[in-house]
Image 1: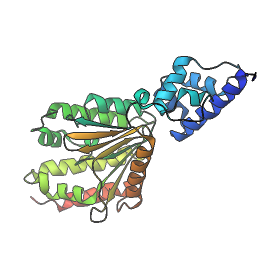
Image 2: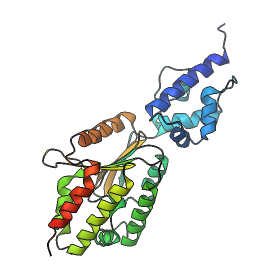
Image 3: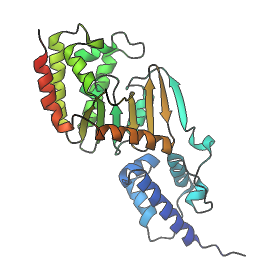
Length: 286
């Protein structure tokens, strides 16, 4: 009969837990929040001299959060994929309420605390908008009032001012130029509204750097749909009133690589944003 040594199981568990932390960004504090334990508890799981196996609910939380099987975590299996019925589908499709203030997106932001959030906005970045721009954009919205959109923008801005946040925004240079020139959906918007918005963008881009970094790519060379990537946890792709939630690690990796390629090809870097915006402001004529 084979001899079972609990210490072997503990060693395998720690090795595989360490690997999962690295795969998910390497930040223990963020990983602890994700699996629902204190940072000190996670440290004990990794380094405690006591030969004690983790609690069943802790193993289950790690398995669910990382989409691996509990058997694999404990060295009872070499297959690391969990059953889809446990971890949820790799792709979800949801209709309606695509605005940043809905409950699902708020939960995603909270879950991603401590991780980098990558963001491709539909128009201007939500957290950089003035109240007047929010009122204009959401005055005909079926899913969110202008007042709620403004409160959401204020909450996102307050969150972005926290020193532990890490946010990257990427959109086309042409979208910002169109706003300054009053083209497209901005046609007919007063010049003072556009100037005030550009002033706010320049101020906040400078104030929030480097925890918030905004990149502009050339839309003649690249295309990017509205997208938010919540660290290694999940990604949401927006298509009008329907959005796709990607929970699969490989899908998230591919979308992250796409986002990072946009940054590498960006025509305007974060430190250049204030000067660019000031120049666009000067082009606005009465």
